[in-house]
Amino acid sequence: MKKQLLGICLVLLCNVAMGQEGNMATSLDVQEIDNDDFIIKSLDTKTAQFSKVAREIWENPELGYLEYTSSKLLADELRAAGFNVETGVADMPTSFVATYGNGGPVLGFLAEFDALPGLSQDAVPYKSVLVEGGNGHGCGHNLFGTAVIASGIALKEWIDTNNVQATLKIFGTPAEEGGGGKVYMVRDGLLKDVDAVINWHPADRNIANASTCNAVMHGYFKFSGQSSHAAGSPDRGRSALDGVEAMNHMVNMMREHVDQRSRIHYVITNGGLAANVVPDYAVVEYMVRHPDVTEVKQMWERVVKAAEGAAMGTGTTMEIEIVSGMYGLLPNETLAKTMHKNLSIVGGVEYDAKELEFAQKIQESFNATKVPPLSNAKDIQPYKLSHFSASTDVGDVSYVVPTVGLGTATWVPGTAAHSWQAVAADGMSIGFKGMMSAAKTMALTGKDLILNPSLIQEAQNEFKKRLGSLVYEPLVGDMMPPLEYRKDQNKVR
Image 1 (cartoon, rainbow, N blue to C red):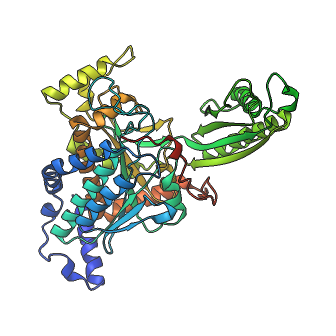
Image 2 (cartoon, rainbow, N blue to C red; image 1 turned 90 degrees about the vertical axis):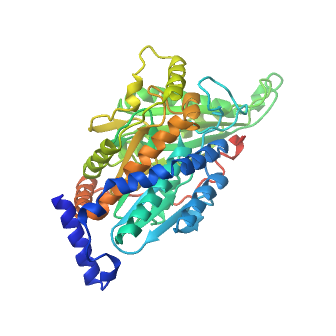
Image 3 (cartoon, helix red, strand yellow; image 1 turned 180 degrees about the vertical axis):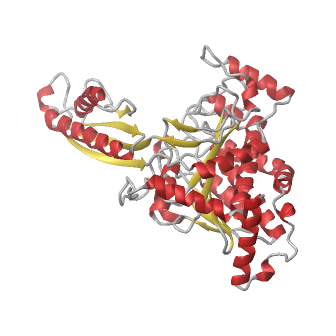
């Protein structure tokens, strides 16, 4: 409470110094303004509204940079709530920045809304494809974006009711799944004036750790050769597929000689059209990951050299199309501990009888020898400093501004991300309950930062210490956003 009183005094002093005494009630009751119930009750009354928004995005799953319906839906909700919305920022048609307020602490919130290809699934506890090869929200971004705008709107109402001075910025960030939309927003300086950033992600548990993750480089290696009859005149051909396979062989040998925390994945996306035709075009997609961004850069250079050698040895040519490059997460324990406190206040997800039956059937579908208890949906995981081996473009944000995130149990405990089981829960009440827990936790965390400027200062001091001498430079260089990287995969309901 001492910190909260200090925060209120600082806000009042700032208002007086700026000649804005009228922006805050002179008889301000500290307990009233710091009452969590206002925000929690506000979001409780809007559960149906935001569940409808999340369901509509779920019913219209759109891939990265193609999320026109989803982006507009979220932006329209923010406009209706009084935010000023700018669309199409950083050369991305489906991006937006929604701003409310003026002066005071500037808090940023990250909203995602892209789906994944090939994960079409109904909201039922058994596999039921809605569109063969269609898209699906297997990472819960229909919930992600919706919870963020819900938290922003609730925090705006709290600001208005208590005449608090603060600025909220909701960033609509396209194409997290490989396209790296946030990278281009960071590169364009859209977060340069933000004091702290808040975000979350769907999960199968409730967790608010200070987390690190893997940095990543992602791109296509496109080989071109000379076609000919594979039996009649093979000597006249130069196989682009040979180039791909030679590259893959060299990279696979390289695995023995890289740090064991590394991750290297590839898939041949085009290997030719007919066995009796020497392929004149072939493509392999690569992703290279490591916790240290410097290590990722070095490994990527080695993969590129393998590709160049493969082209030389097979008499083909090769070009590289970079899709994305992302930093790992820079943790911030000051913010994470505040977030964990608020998650503990909000609590996890409690299943009703129908949801319990759904969850039990989902767990029966797992190909696993050990399944976590369903009580994990309600429990709050202990706080710790953790690492996960996936990647996110939130990492780039965390290298320019103190950033915090959490996960809530939108999925049945034990569910793997990018699975049909995740898609199923994302479209029904289990997902919506977890979404609202996240919205409440983010809004309460925003409130704490507004009332306690010392928390923001402490977070920024930690940020500078962790960053050290590293100077952030986007891994994508000056390339334009790859707006068509999912175009050929797009199958919607």
